[in-house]
Image (cartoon, rainbow, N blue to C red; front, side, top):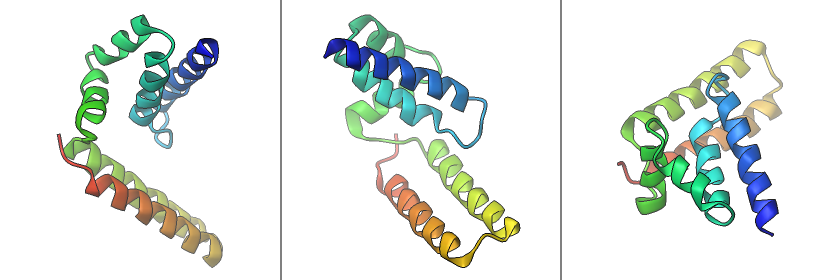
Length: 117
């Protein structure tokens, strides 16, 4: 089972790395998932993620308090608004827009109800 956690953790890091360069892939949530996986498979990689100078504080805030920084909250909500704006500009069907609005509002509600770090 450790091998499966390790592989899933590595995949999460890889996709999170790509997300650092692509605006639609969420980097930090994927690295939080990777930390979860590495906690069960590789203490060394888990520690590496927790002590990473850029992403470590975000991961520790989430693991210790379920907290998201105010800056990250603002960026996440802005990304949701931008995503919906793009969908409007593309003229997507109304059913798809409604579905997208429900999902994005749910995501925003979740993010905004988390404590701030």
